[in-house]
Image 1 (spheres, rainbow, N blue to C red):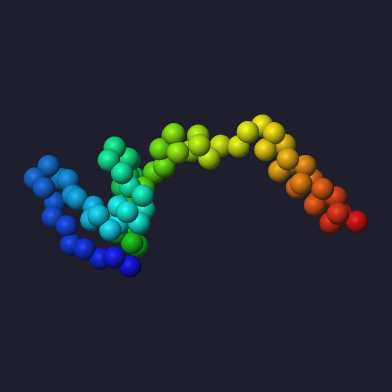
Image 2 (cartoon, rainbow, N blue to C red; image 1 turned 180 degrees about the horizontal axis):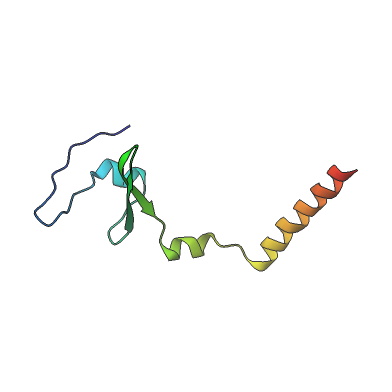
Length: 79
């Protein structure tokens, strides 16, 4: 676990240490969700870019194949 103290600027900005940016693949222009949690305090959660999600998207044929496999497994379990 990386732990580092950062300073808040007069505009409320902080710098995320390089080791953490690298570990979580946070790059210039990326978005971070700032979430308040009453038990854990403030959480910073990296949000994947639309382009990154598109690159992970399945084709229609890949989706169909996964459905076929799942259906086949269900049929075998029912026997």
